[in-house]
Length: 378
Image 1 (cartoon, rainbow, N blue to C red):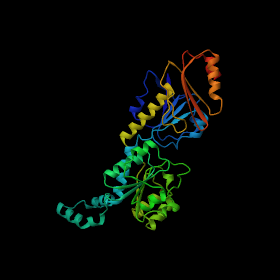
Image 2: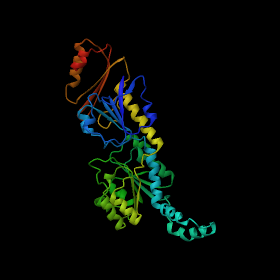
Image 3: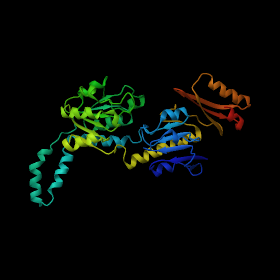
Image 4: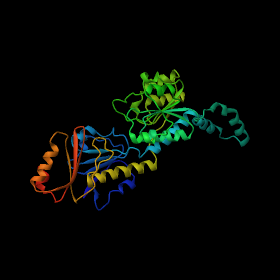
């Protein structure tokens, strides 16, 4: 029997993955945690904790280094919310190009007019909300993972030209890209040639303030910037200065701050969204199901996919006795483990080992049940 603890509002479809015959809730000393935005500290790492499932892509709310030091696997759910974010990027491009928001605000001032007056007012004022179409424009996508590649597909169907930049693109992501996507050799080239720029990279040391004075000087004049990834990727002070000097025309962000709220109220060239990127019923379900499946597969079989701190590993079961052993990635560790098993005259039916940085993990199927003494020795 395995245990789990729930933080935040996790979709029931995900919780239903935890079969009542194999799992039950434990608020005190669970084997696993499943969460969305809950900010964890090392105080949340109870003695029995083996894994954490983040129902979402970012793991900035989890002290991953501490988890790794304690042999705790941290999962995320890349791609589960990709469609939700992609659709909101398209919405952001439209909001920044057509006078939708200001037109809506104006329309609300027409109350009290009859149909004839209302039509006359609208016809006389609609020129103030004239915008531009997306077709034929160039979209620059920084980060070509699950979201970026999906966005490229949709933008191509809409008749846009696409430039992509991702020095770390995976083979799978590359295969998902439309063949006509232009692969930029540098971010500067993308910035200089794009009418719209959408960011889809994680917030790490290398991407903090990725968009700042240094990069803004390469922007095509009048470009529109969309950030639905993480707030820290964009330097807001530099963005406001770029708006003042017309380097960029509009900034759409899912991460409001006091200075951006003030700017939006005063000039209407900043469009703020209250963390709506993955806020759809479908995305919440997808993320919850994916996180719960990963937790279940790990606790039952030691299978790891989509971990941010452990290597991916799987092994088809050969026997009913499986040992999942996490160790420091040091020379001789596998030999020490197999020697201990051999000392107990137990045959290994199958095994596999994977490592990542300082961590190693072994899945070992035994032909006989391991004794408590063997487990303690290992």
